[in-house]
Image 1 (cartoon, helix red, strand yellow):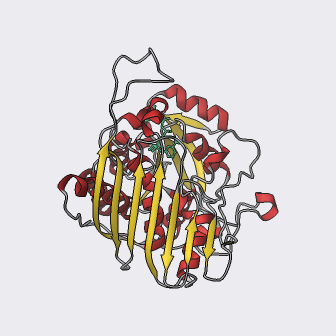
Image 2: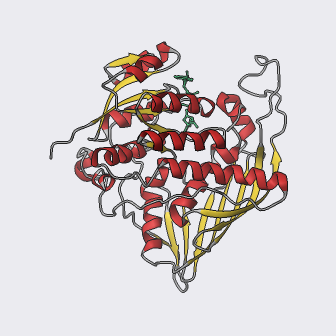
Length: 393
Ligand SMILES: NC(=O)c1ccc[n+]([C@@H]2O[C@H](COP(=O)([O-])OP(=O)(O)OC[C@H]3O[C@@H](n4cnc5c(N)ncnc54)[C@H](O)[C@@H]3O)[C@@H](O)[C@H]2O)c1
């Protein structure tokens, strides 16, 4: 089959662009990564040289280029809205890193704009398409734990200390619930479906006096805006309830957990910020069993030495959307509706905490599982068409 590739540009050549550029240029037969762009042209040039990407452009040139179909937005969250809007208005399909935007109304307006223009708009985290979460989804769909009754989602970090290094964390969208909790909410939505009601309590981040990396270099302390610790209760459309604890005000010893309880068994799902979180099935009268992956994209680096390899298979969501574009089907995985729903659930926790009332999200989404049985390891991972088959339909 001759594959007509989707001509792609990356906008935002910072930290996470390394794994995206490497993967998009080498892992997916559907993607032709031709162009890099950054508000700082030197950053784009440096990445183009490092990864062998043919050209760099300004943001206006990307918008005007007739030979770019899809733009991947990898700027910090505060800049997503302006980049996405500009590219949609220029007639480009867009895929953006999380958070969708830092403002719910802005995200809703972008969904509307994409619909009006008939353009695809996709939103990370695409870790939900990795082997770990897709295997868990497959086991749930096949009844291994019966009907899902409840879920437990928890992650902790010292987000304030992290904001010394990752500067975009100091602004809107930088709290632990938004920056990292989104992987847990995304996983919960991918496994259980949409959320229909939210109750919550929250606490803000402390005012932070610079401690380590920027000691003496920063005059002013800062405070990450919003609730950095949230305890919430969720009800899902399928009737299950969920308990959420996101704590960004504690130490960096990460204790993450996703546990899905059902009428016939329990599933433990590994780190949703990776592509290969272990999936453990617990059934009465058996020792817990680590389940084999039913899907590819297990986050293992098979393309040779690479310092950013631990960032895994980022880019699957872009490729899945590219296949949707090429085949004229909906992208019912990392879609704009998925991104909007993740954002509204997180924002709903803040609103519920602030008002002391139950927040009822307006949004919902469909999240289809990927086809099982296609793996990333064929011929040592050099056959690009193996796991990619699971992204086509
Ligand atoms: N760093 C991580 O570990 C990580 C992991 C997963 C997802 N993400 C997400 O990826 C995105 C980027 O994160 P990062 O860590 O790479 O940030 P970063 O600050 O390292 O890079 C962002 C880049 O965008 C550029 N930029 C800013 N405004 C721009 C504009 N208007 N036009 C073009 N370029 C512009 C900046 O110059 C910078 O090079 C964020 O949405 C973040 O949530 C980051």
